[in-house]
Image 1: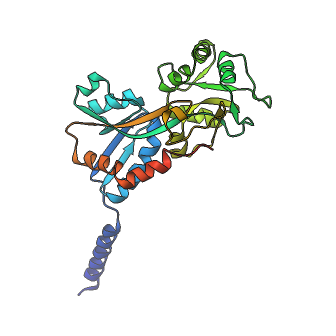
Image 2: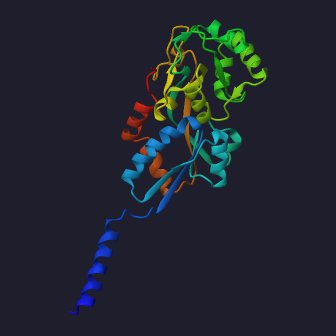
Length: 274
C-alpha cells in the first residue's frame, strides 16, 4: 500500500476513534423553572438524572416564581414547573397536574458572623416595627424583606397580631431592602452583615448557603417535624406538569419519586438547622 494512502487511512481511523470517545450529543433537553426555593434541589436531582440518562440535558432556569413557572409551562417555555403552592382552579382547568414532592420548614436566619443565637417573638416584632435596630453586640440589624404577596411575608404576619402590624410597618418604611426572588433573598441574607430574614432550610442546604439559623422563642426549626412543632410554617413544594406530558418528563417525575430521588431530597431538603 502506498505510504500516502496508508497515512490517510491511519488518520481516518484515528478520527473515528476520537469520535467514538466523545460523549454523545444531547438528544433531549428537559427544561425546569419556577419557585427559587426548589431550584437547588432540582439541580441536584437533575444531575443524577443525567447520569442515568446520558442523552438528556436538564436545564434549570433562574427563579421565575411559582406563578411564573406555571405560566411558562402553559406557554411551552418549560417542560416542568416547580411551585411552592397548589394549583389555582384556573390553572388546573388548563390541564395541569401538581404533585407534592417535598416539604421544608421556614427558618429565621441571619449572616454567619452575627453573635446572637436567637430572638424572642417580642424582639422580632420590635425589629420589624423599627423599635429595635441593633444586635446585642451593637451590629446594626439589616432586615431583608420579601414582597407582601410572598408566603414568607404572610408566614411572619400570621405569627401574631403584633407581628402582622410590625410587618406592615416595615414595608411602609422608606429605603427597606426587598428581595424580589428566593435567590436574591439568600444572597442578601448571606452577604449582608447583621442581616435578618426568612428562608427555607431546604434552600440553605441545596444551595450550600453560609447562613446562621436562629432560635425563635427558644425553638429551632426542625425538618420532618409536625407543623405545630415549628413556629414558622412549612413550605410545600410541588412538581407541575401537563396532563399529556412527554416521555422524558414522565421519567424525570418517576425518578423524583423513586427511592433514590426521595433519598436525595431527604438529605437535602430536610437539612437540620445549624
